[in-house]
Image (cartoon, rainbow, N blue to C red; front, side):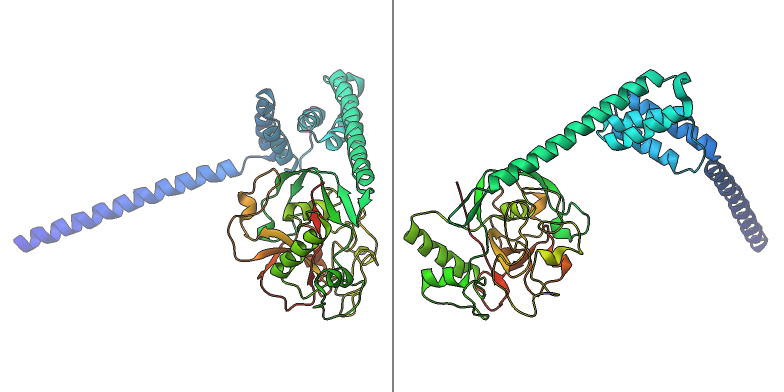
Length: 377
C-alpha cells in the first residue's frame, strides 16, 4: 500500500513539473513574439519616433543628442520630409557644424521653397552659418600667418615658435594606444633648433664625434639622453645661455607647424612626405646633411626622419590620461625617455607627428638617434 502511494505521489510531481515547464515555454514564446513585434516596427514608424525624440532634445537644448537622433533616422533609408532637413540643419548649426548645416538647410529650401513653414528661419540660419564659416576660415588663416611670421624670426640657429593651444595626440585616429586620449595642451613661446644638432656642433663643444656616419653637417648620432645632458651643460657654460631639450608637447606642437592638423611635419599627403624627409625609402641606409629637404610651415627642417630626437620627458604610455593642460613636463617617474620624429630607418607610421617612442637614457648604440635644442625666450 505504501509502495502504491509513493508511486502515485511521484507521478503527481512529474505531472506538475511538466505542466510548469509547458507554462514557462508558452510565456517565453509570448515574450519573444512581443520583442519580435517591437523589432518589426516599420521604418516609417521608427522615423517618427526618432524625429520626435530629436525634437524634444532640441527643445531641451541638447543639440548633440538631437544631431545623433536625426542621423539615426537618416540611416533608415526612407524618404525624409522637408521639415526634417530644417530641423537637422538647425541642430547642426547649434553644434558648430556650419558646412553640414548649410547643406541640410539648402536641401530644405530647395524642397519647400517660400511656402515652407520654416522658410524665414531657414534663410536667417543660412546667412548666419555662412558668416560663421567665413569667420572660422579667416581666424584659421590669420592664426597660421601669425605663426609663420613669428617663426621667421631666427636667432643663433633657433626658430622662434609662438605658443598657443592645440589638441595633442591621435587626432587622425591612426595611432597607437599611447597616443590617446587626444587632449588640449597650451604652451608658452619658445625657441627650437632650426635643424638637429650636427656633428660639427657636437665636436666643437665636446672635442669628439661618436657618430657612425661621419659628416660634419649630418646630425650627430649614437648619443644617449645622458650624453646630451652633458653636452647641454657644457654648451650653456660656454655660451651663457640656457639651452635644453624640448618637452614632448613642444616637439609635437612645433612639428605640426604650430599645432596645425598635420599628420607628417609639413604635409598630410603621404605621397609627398619624401619631399620633407630622409627615411626608409630615400635615406639609402644612412643619415644625410641637415636642411637638405623642405622645412615645415614654420621653418623647421628634418622634424621627421634622419634621426629620432630625444625629448626631456620621461615616458609613460598612459601619460595622456593624466597630463596637465598647461606646459606639461611629462610624468614624474619612469625609466625611459621620450623619442620623437622617426629616423632614417623608419617607415611612414613611425614618422607621424603624433607617434611616440621611448628608449633607455643610457644607451648610445643606435645610429638613428640624435636631438635638437630648445630654450626659453
